[in-house]
Amino acid sequence: MTLGDKIRYLREMEGTLRGLNREMTQQEVVRAIRKELHQSISQSYLSQIENGSRQHLTNTTRMLLANFFKVHPGYLVDDPEGFHTELISDLRTSEERLDLWLIEGAETFRSDPELCAAMLKVARHEDSRRSFVLLAAILETPGLSDQLLHVLRRDAV
Image 1 (cartoon, rainbow, N blue to C red):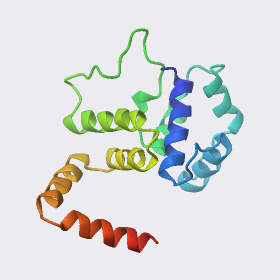
Image 2 (image 1 turned 180 degrees about the vertical axis):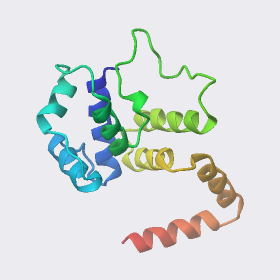
Image 3 (image 1 turned 120 degrees about the horizontal axis):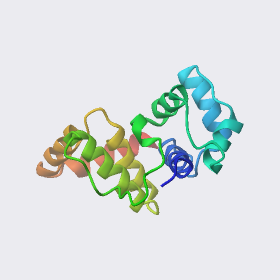
């Protein structure tokens, strides 16, 4: 996957996470970075990255985009020829492997926006592993998941 493909994918996922039910536009990303991180990047620069005319990022831009999209800065490079995302190094922590697995899974379930967003939210959580341990405890308690879902959906309305 190229750097441009990754940025486009991240814009799409960010739009889903923000409840837009569509990808964020480049201009929306620029505005959100300015508002949330108090830093800036131009829409034309973002466009050059996505269309491949700018193939490398400065360290400052890489850190800015990694911060905004909440990904590891190392993700924001072109994948080497023949690279497969399912190959995971033993050097990564189990938390990183879990987060990567969730992000890849979210892409698989893009057609189910609710599930896709849930997987990305868990991946972005500070402690993804703990989220799953909590989910397991909820599911082990008879009736608790139905009660929680009822209360949370009622509060959302």
